[in-house]
Every structure is written in C-alpha cells, then in structure tokens.
Image 1: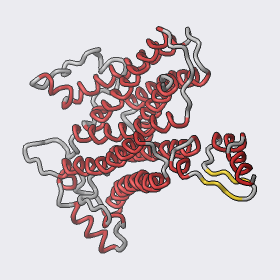
Image 2: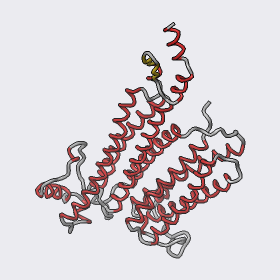
Image 3: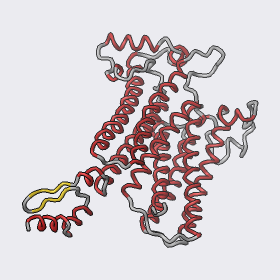
Image 4: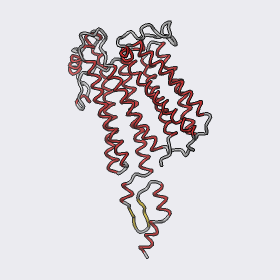
Length: 391
C-alpha cells in the first residue's frame, strides 16, 4: 500500500504543476523523489536564467562598443603600445612606472607626429581611457566564459544551445585578438604617408562589426529564450512584413558598420553641412581616387556621402515598415517594438545631423554611436516578435 501511495503522489497533479513551473524535484510525504533525467534537461526556469544571462552579456558588449567609440573620439587608442592578457590589468602605480610607460609611447608615430608636446598628465588621461576599454573587454570575456562553464555543468543547455554558447565564447576571444591587430596598424611607421597616425579603417570596421555581430547573436538568442513566439496566422502579408523587417534590420546593421569607416577616416569633419555637402548635392571630389572602388573605403568624402545615403535609406525603410505594419493585426508587443524602432530612427538621424553640423563634439558623437546600437537592438526585438512559431 505504501508503494502504491508513493506512486500516486508522484503522478499527481501537484507533480505536474511543479514540473510546469520549472521544478525538477518533487517532495512528498514520507520522502523526496528526484528525477535525474529531469534535472539534466533544460526547462522553462533554466531557459529564463540563460536568456537573462545572455541579455546581460549583450548589455556588457554595448558598454564595450560605447567605450571603444569614446576611446576613438578622444584619440586614446594608441596610448598602450603593448598587449598582455594579464600583466596589463594593473596600470602603472609609481611615478617611475608612469615615466617608463610614457617613454615607450614616445617611440611611436602618434607621439612623434601628433602629440610631441604632450605632458605626462595628458598621457595619463588617454592611457586610462584605453586601459578602461581593455579591462571592460576582459570583463565581457569573463561574463561569457564563467557562466557558460557553470550552466554547462548544471545541464541548462540543449545540444544546439551548447554549440551557440561555444561560438559566442570563441567570438569573444577572437574579438580581443582583433582589437590588438587593429591597434598594431596605428603603431607602424609609415614613411610614405603624410597623414596623421591612425588605425586602419578596415581593421576598425572589422573590430566594430565583430562586436556588433556578437551583440546581435547574444541578444537574439536571449530574446528567443525569454519571449514566447506569437501565434500569428501565416498570411501573405505577414510573410511580406517579416521579409521587410529582415531587410530593414540588415540595412540598419550596414549603416552602423559604415560609421566605423567614418570614424576611422575622421570623415565627419570634411563636410559639415546638411542636406548639401558644402553647396553641392554631389561633391566634386566624390570619386577623386583611382581606382574608383578605392573611394568607398579610403576617400573621406565618399565615406561620409555613403553614410548619409545609408542613414536616409534606413530611415525611409523603417518608416515604410511602420506604415505597412499599421494595416495589419499584430500582437501588442510587436506593435510597440515597431513603434519604438520608428521613433528611434528619427532620433538617430537628428543626432547624426547635429553631430555633423557641430563639428563632431565628443559627447554628441558618442551619443550618436550609442544610438546606432539602440536602433539595432530595436530591430532585433522586432524580428524576435515576428518570428515563426517553432514546429
């Protein structure tokens, strides 16, 4: 009789309710029954934990992107001429250590050409800017790697999720190496160049692009774990809206990436007027370099022109997406996401124009760069709300 009673208790509605709430163990009168299989299989509760962790990681990536932008705007990125994973975590402490670090910096082109009158206190400022960016990057790495180990041991990951988190952790490591590869391009002697020392705009865009990809992947995965897919009838209009949203999201990403070329070439300082560039719609030096393709990546005028066109095109696409969605019956969350995307698009364009007209002040330029990440975030949210129900 006791065995029958225990069996009925385990199969009771109470046990089903507890499992539904995400519990993998059930306590009954007379003892505790633990299912090893249930403990090792991800459930709703573990998915919520993993989803929140990934969203937290994506927030840290945003911090790294913003800090990287401020570091670039304050021209601090070349202040640390070495790269050591652990040793550089401790900044110089004594005056002698600061003098030694400053002496190393003086051997490189940025000091010789651009900052030859720099004082030690001024060097300390740019050093701490770059040091803060690098330490934040290490924090991002730990935020991905340590919880991954813990959640893996707890059995919170499905087979597909294991592949995703391993990819994210690997991408964080790759991002750090890419950052140092970028910095190295600004430390090289270039006798044939008469330009001020700066990092390669190609490597800068690769560094920013990989950070944005890491952010998008983390946020998308987190949102799909936290937000249940809507049961929406698969109509022709919905499929068109979904394709429209995907194209718009890609356009927003491309526009943000083009901003790296603008930053890398200081292209925001060549034509500080809007909507015309000086007194012309199409400037004379738009295709001044040969071959023609070179202009799109190395001519500051062309790079700024492209960024303007991409920004206006993104705004137009988002406006169209908003208007198209108004004619459809969508869940409340999806409507809110699309509305916020449209509002942010107009805000971002206004920030971009103001940054241009005011000759790229650092606070405004940093806000504009942060706005691009906010716009990308809302585009990902829209896509998460419109995704198909899993079969």
